[in-house]
Length: 314
Image (cartoon, rainbow, N blue to C red; front, side, top):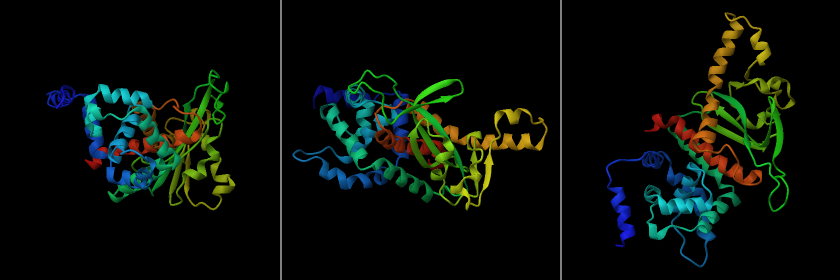
């Protein structure tokens, strides 16, 4: 055994467990690896000809770590060389770390076949089998994910699929993530991505699964019940009042009390954005175009779901 490999074994035996090690151990237990591998396997065996590929389980774990820590392909390779706990999670030694091209090719494989959505659907099916429902009601919301507005690139232009929008008194350039969240557990059941200048209400019909008893949204969805695509939908619309209207309500009025209760329920959707943008660090897009970022966001939404209900699964 080489001294480098021996160092891996030595670090594994140390007494103190770091926060990274605790987190990776938690994700190892939470993620349904077998279900995640199923949609990839049919494509993975054909993707690498001429050399023996790394095990699918290894590449999937490396890709997940890339998303956990928002790392680039070369950044992921460097981290595997530097951090023993990440190598253990991937099931490799320092002598068998895949290079950044192998990591990139696996990511491109997932993007090419839109496997992010398929993995997201399978993970949600796993949660449903464990008794977590998505049918009672839906909370809708959207968040802007920033993109670089610089034109100092090969095309000397901004990303054509990203646009700017004014929110409050500030302009934002990027894309928008729209999600439909289960009102009982706060789990994401549907997501759509658009450029940042697309209004929330125009995508709302794509965030509903059709079995809701009620739909909850902020003031950006005012008037949604009057739109043509919702005319045959029989649900209770619980849409927040505009801030100016809310300020005119008496503090002890029934209307104000209802607004407060609805806001407390609606807050569940913000928890998803917290995990995606803060915990997993995806507040700014890493790639050009919507497709690559969407594939990544499907997996981040799946991870966010697991984090929200981990106390019910362990």
